[in-house]
Amino acid sequence: MSIEYTPGPLLEAARNTPTALWNDSADPDELRQSISFGGVGATCNPSIAYTCITKRKDKWLPRIAEIAEEMPQASESEIGWQAVKELSLEAAALLEPIFERENGRDGRLSIQTDPRLARSAKALADQAEEFSKLTKNIIVKIPATEVGIAAIEDATYRGVSVNVTVSFTVPQAITAGEAIERGLKRREAEGKDTSTMGPVVTLMGGRLDDWIKIVAKRDGLFLDPGHLEWGGVAALKRAYHEFQARGLRARVLSAAFRNVMHWSELVGGDLVVSPPFAWQEIINKSDYKPVNRIDEPVAPEIMKTLQSIPEFVRAYEPDGLTPAEFDAFGATRRTLRGFLQADADLDELVRNVIMPQP
Image (cartoon, rainbow, N blue to C red; front, side, top):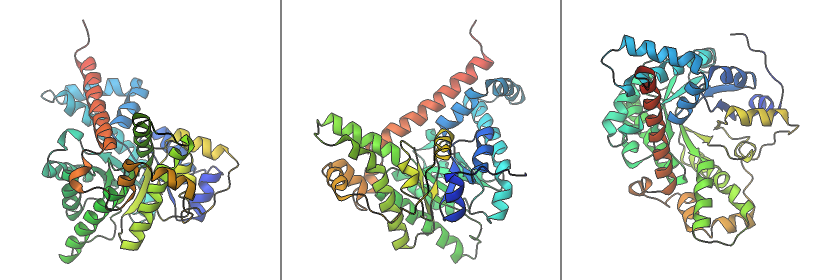
């Protein structure tokens, strides 16, 4: 694929810093443009996959009907997930040249394990291994829940490059990064190759911001609302520096954009930033000049506000949550419920194709 690059802040940062740009969507048209901005990967989840399919109904509704014919005994869910796999493979093909150039560190397309399997570590690891074999440059999302942590280590040991998801806090990120490290070391102890694996640990900074704002409103807190825009940034910076200090090989990934600081404040770090394409367009049309800010701490007055909120402290301190508490954290429950709803929405879409209303 011949790439015609689009000059702008994103391309400048991609070329002059170790900060990698991924696209937060598997939509092929958006991904092509993201690659022109310097993008070297893409992420997906149930909500994004459902959006991509509904955005291109002219293509996917007929294809879903064909899949149903080809798989006459398949459930609605199996038909929908086959469509998601095909969407993912189309996007993955665009990234293969980058995957080869970067020896597996980048050039990957994320596909997420089914959230309905979230109660079984074995089922998650089994599906992760299945998805990883769809094509060579797949990276598989597994949630940073208590069960998910065990699946993350197991899948890594099996040779799956994992993208940790449903992760909003520093303790989740560290625990997941350590699970990946254990999986890598187990492989290496048995003489198995890890050289082309490219694991990442997502911290969904915007969803942490969302949750802290809900808590502040719920508890009637009197504070500067602008300071609440910085919670995710502070957690991402903390997680990044903890990974560096602990020698964890997985990279931190910033996702769930709510403001441009989820990119601009992280530039300079050896990490991944994955904005939705709409945010990439906003950034790249600006005259912003990228500056290495990963090592610049969040302003003391902002941190004072944030650290007055106990729920933020739980998210920010490395020992703020135990794995047994991951599942009950507000952002975790909200996100898993959203992903489960996206699966239900996809099931309904399939149902309306194969069994239209009379």
